[in-house]
Image (tube, rainbow, N blue to C red):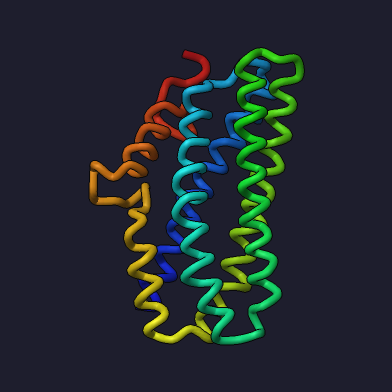
Length: 196
């Protein structure tokens, strides 16, 4: 169960990384060519961030990985404190993304620049957060958590249904991930290119 749980967590990180990369790509593309971004795609990406990592992934890390690890060792105290703080700060960064996207879409002066700064802050925080989890937290979890812990973690995360791999076509996140891929231009997705 240990390998299954780790694989699920890492695959969810890859799904989030794909969205984060896409968000950064679209903003950089708008910055470089001066065109207004595709707000449907950006809103779909923010909806995904609101509902998959913020509502499912991070809370389950808090309850099933962080809390369990704190009961097994004090060696993880510092990294769990930092990651918990990052989860809270991440929610604030997501709020800023929404606020700045609203302003950008409304045509406020400097809207792209402000939204771009919010995207930069969010993407940098997510890269650092996922790296800390994968390079420090998960090795500690591998070292200290029990087989029973891993069974419970695998079951909890298995209920999420990774949007890239869900066999359930009705899964809300699978459908959303597919929608993002359909709307987004290459190289993120298969939607119309900016030149079309």
